[in-house]
Length: 569
Image (tube, rainbow, N blue to C red; front, side, top):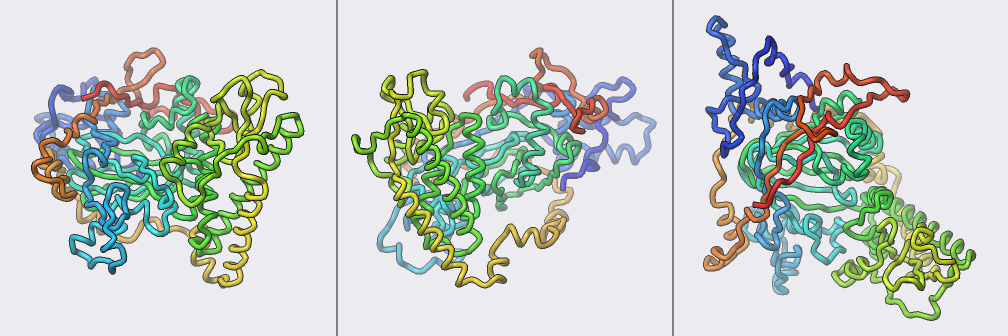
């Protein structure tokens, strides 16, 4: 867990009118000889211990670099610009993992002769192509719901590459549609991660802190947190009683984030990573929460939650545990009840049902392919941007505008008799799907014992006892990397390694686009209402905040930094 004790009061280094050392922002990188921001220059009469302390602070260790990062964020003692090649398309630039030859990845090939062969042995070349730990494959693994999404969606089921340098920052965010994510560190300097659990209490707590300290900015952009451009110190979360955990990710290690779990962090030097999403069957209720949240901000989802829910219901054989099947049935009941209730209400109010007059294509429920995704994009609600999967309301005044059943009154001011409802999924079809789900649940209920169900239910298993403070192996890992100096030399031959792993012909390597094209420069600066940069003393903020009626501390826009792209490279 993140501890405040790791960060001594950096304001002590500025006492008695001393000015902090300034690093020239024009320097291409920080070398091991560059003085760190938190260094206090030793006076001639100070003891040998003080000099030793300064030498320790000069070392490029993870602790020192982490301290320097938050010195920049919290005190704005220096203006710093860093390079970050984020969200690099592996379809165009290649992946750090080899591509499957058994059709397990969107970018791979499918050799019919290899599909039915036994799984390759660990350590062989084919193993790394076909293992589900390969980030090109994991979205399509047998227990991932995203295996039904056959269209490639960059960053969701097609990995993105990330090329970082010292202090390249990925700001606080959670994943699209509250999906799981997995990040692999290919090579280079470590990444410092911070995480907040995805429980409603903790995730809501982070958002509350965020709103307290960016209230003015959020009046202009209510969904600012989804922009992934704001970084604030874990100190603020701790002051708001929000639990924060941290982990240092080294080369060769995976980091997995859970649904709605907020995370952020930065690189400690040049590195290369890769990330993608996946979703197990217990994700379904998190997906429902994300869908409702997006509708409140009129934010389009990356795919239709209703479509994926009914696609899961069309593959009931994959529901092998009572707990996950119960979640699916509950979600089916929720969406079907609302759909049928609103249909009845609108038709009784005078909206015409034209189901018998026009022929609409049936919703495809076996998979989400490119044609289905394109069709969904054409039936987004005019008000909330929700995919109108089951039905939609339209008006004679527009040939393209449609609305979900919740927001038909926002679409136009035309009288009700000019509006009509288009239905893709009939009441009979929806109720039949629900009944099949209930029968499957009953079948599992009869076959599973109570003990088996408890063991297979991660929610019940977690609530049955306290979680350990430290995961197995954490202390050993910390000891192994303790006082390890970070190598800040640039990473060489990344493009060559990627080309070799993905079997790009040598004559074609020269024609590969430069990854630098996708890079951008980001400025770490403080956002204030006046647009000026001013000192920001976060460590003392809790003393300056006034208590609100609900017992929380109010804040202002000047308590965080906003990271913005400045130019394309």
